[in-house]
Length: 359
Image (cartoon, rainbow, N blue to C red; front, side, top):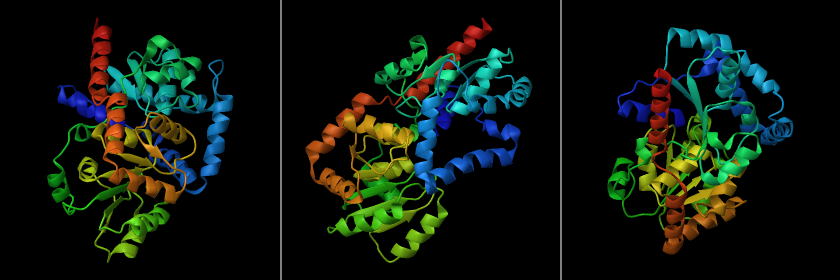
């Protein structure tokens, strides 16, 4: 989604932008295997993912290359052939794996274009220090020290923010948003999101939230691509007019405009989209590793409320609903800490790098 936001901003300014999954250069099977392994681990054995993230932090060092780097270097020749056939002016990546491939190519004289990376979490995840991007776009100035301490040159750090699509940068009238989302105009609305892959214990969270709603509050659940979760919740709540189950939703911005409180796991991109929309946030259980740091970053700056247990999370949501002062303080903190025009600033940078290359 961050890549789409950049491509959208580039096309709006008359540039051509192509987005690709670098793993597809090794075939659809490789792409599915790499993405599928991550999804399965975090869904079913998050403790193991925490362990892998911890191990990554231990072995991560600017003084040596990791097995992750050499694995991604295998894509260098296919990517070089692709770039030879498709001569782009500049390259941007929102993922470590592509950055490592491009770094290897740069070192071996296989890359003529400048390339930048865009960080989509509020922390420096392991192995970024072994890349050599021309610039690193980071989410916030306060993170510069962390990146620099990992060996990334300060002069390459640009605190432009996390890019979000245009649908999140404007605000739709609440009444209109609710009409478009088929929600009653006068009742409070809780929006529950679990990310595009449907992570989190939503099947446990929703019954607890429903029990706390005694004044006709509406609950909208976006299940993402988790069709099993969607079927389960539809079966459980098909007769409850106050609970609205949705699958993969393209008009997420409209649902945010329609809601009063958002419950979401602390993914860097979703949290930024909500903060740009200026929606009060309650962060639910994070995926171990970088999402824990995202949660800490947001809650420490009062852009969200983080609570451990389901009941505490629900109480936080009800508290936000009734406390206008709390809502406004949270919205003000969001306005102070996120940059809605990050995608535009990134496109400006890419255009400048391209012009410099052309001389």
